[in-house]
Amino acid sequence: MPIDLANPLVSRAVTILRENDTGSSTKPAPALYPHMWSWDSALIAIGIAQYSVERAAQEMRSLMRGQWKNGMIPQIQFNPCVPPEAYFPDAGRWDVHAVSTDAPEGVATSGIIQPPVHAIAVRAICDLADRYQARALAREFYGPLREWHRYLMSARDPEVSGLVTIVHPWESGMDNSPRWDRALARIEVPEGELPPFTRRDLAHVSDPSQRPTDDDYRRYMWIVEVLKRGGYRVDRIYDDLPFRVKDIVSSALLVAANESLIQIANLADADFDDFDLIEAWINRGRTGLAEQWDERVDQCLDLDLVEGESISVRTIAAFAPVMAGQLTPARRAALTNLWRSGAFLGHPDLRWPLPASTSPEEPAFNPTRYWRGPVWPVMNWLLWWAWTRIGEFDIADELRENALAQVSEGGFYEYFDPFTGQGLGSDAQSWTAAAVLDWMADS
Image (cartoon, rainbow, N blue to C red; front, side, top):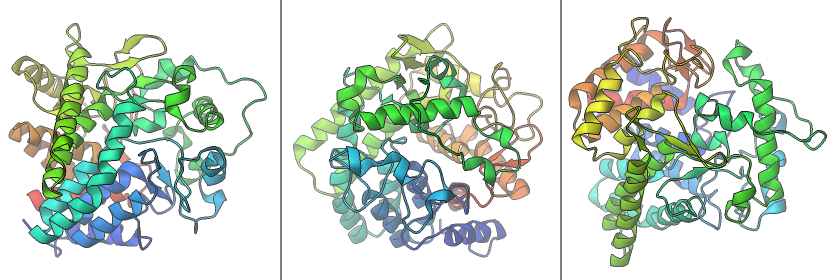
């Protein structure tokens, strides 16, 4: 249903998105994130579409300007009006045009990816457009989205496993998750080979302990250096990369995105062969996820390719199969039980029954540090959307109700302390506002 612009929560959400609007793209936050982030903008566009389909389409149009010639949609597209000292690593540190012929002309970007939610966003925008506009948008975006998915299914899956390989923790979108601790700790930064740098993120939060540690940040920057030396050609330097993990969340979202891509292909009158190709991608993704299910812990697990071992940490990534959909009855039961257990929504100390990014029962849990415990409204939205997709409407409705209560009481923060309810990270966060608009439209 149409959103009620007179509702105070809706009005505040729309105001945040308009204030973070640069004219052609939307900043994730006023100061901490001054550029355009890939999965942020796609998810933001879903919220914007609730009050302007055309502005949502423009968000995706601006994002696609940064697509590389090999199909990759990069993690960051840099705003040339923002001074380099405002954010690190800046465009000069990535230096993509100097080392890669695949980089887009006239657009400064990073050289890595983020989770593939873009087709999901375009389909959501098309669903809110009129018939003529929906077909026009599908024809505009179908080709770039198909090539993005082709890149993921080739350069990021040379094993033909159906699972997406990430080569930097930033690519997961859950940068500082304990899922990456062991793989990161193994990386040694050679003495004297990492160019010096100054972190900028710590200046934009009230408590630096909320952010990744300096040791981890050095490892992050060393991985960037390795990728840059290899021209960001993951397909060519794959076996030499120090961080290679099959990410189950990105893989599950790609399955869902391919399902959305089929709907977009239908609107765009795509070639029949394309439908067979996308169906094959979907089946490959489902098979890969099924093979990563560990019966000992009743969870789907990431796979560290460098070490050759699965990663067993209870985080919200445990619910990746819900995002992919089509669960067996046994696995659906296992995940709904985990959802309601003391490891997640059943924990007695939660301010609201909402999923902490890392289970409070995990040794690595930290209620205020980035991705190691805080509750993220945007992840609440993704999980609400996922539970709705598989027909678990009671879980989805309760999640939406409590997530809206959290934002209504705590503000439009990036994330929240799961126990105290304190807002953390950046205030006036765009994808929090976008999530609220989509929830309010659904309610």
